[in-house]
Image 1 (tube, rainbow, N blue to C red):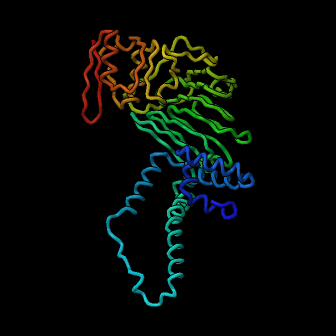
Image 2 (cartoon, rainbow, N blue to C red; image 1 turned 90 degrees about the vertical axis):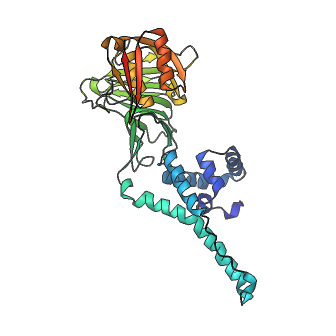
Image 3 (cartoon, rainbow, N blue to C red; image 1 turned 135 degrees about the vertical axis):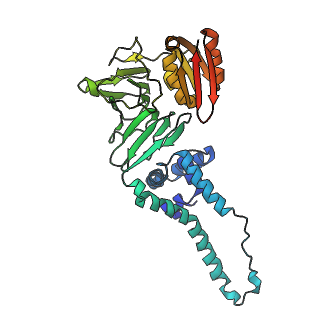
Length: 370
């Protein structure tokens, strides 16, 4: 693409530029970075086009975008063959140049129409006039790129909501469940995660927030950068959190609604001092337990079976039933990567004696007994 013909329309209809915005092709990233270095005066235009792309498209979860693209592709790939007209049989060949020009513009229009459709949907759809919500069911995880360029990994049984002005007038996120945030730096517009028990404010950082309905504890674990945590139930006390530390708060004043009536309630660990940051522990393999879920890893560190049951419910979409309450207090330590539920329970059974049955009807139900 030559320097003197580039504009936002060219960029937003260029597949390699879209790939550059999404970060999915090293070749396209290198191409556009090289273009910027070659024509630095175009940097502002390219950044503006990139921001518009993110605003228009990245409010959708990656899976939603793939579904729309596949639907469009299937329509374009229909097997009905378009009739072929032999141009040599046409009268008035002197108009061929005009016809070719018309076909060229028709092709451009075909490329722009899907873009126009998505723009119209974004700005005029009733679903986008107030807020946008992303949800994961039990047993599901999603990676989402937000309009400001930040990334969110949404854990199972979770929900985040953003307002329509996100990335422009504010960067407020409302979380139920657990999510890992990799925040793009923007000193003018702080990134704030709202939960019933605490607010987490960041400028450019990476951190995990766990605030499930049904759990009496809310946690924030900081991996990189600096965050400011406001404890709502402690007189809005502000705590600065440094890398590789976490803060946990047991909340009593907030009304807690369970996600499911039979979902085990996470208990409070006896070694947690409310409102005081503690250092994150590494597992024997050097993993950080609080964010291991991002890599499809389960880590138990002297956790009670009751706490583990809550995790297994979200991880596998299984309902855990204790036939003997003593089993709830069994403690386990272990690491699992991409193992199925039966395998995990079988390994746990090796260290503490209990029996389990798995009923795979409409919903997976695990019954535990001595």
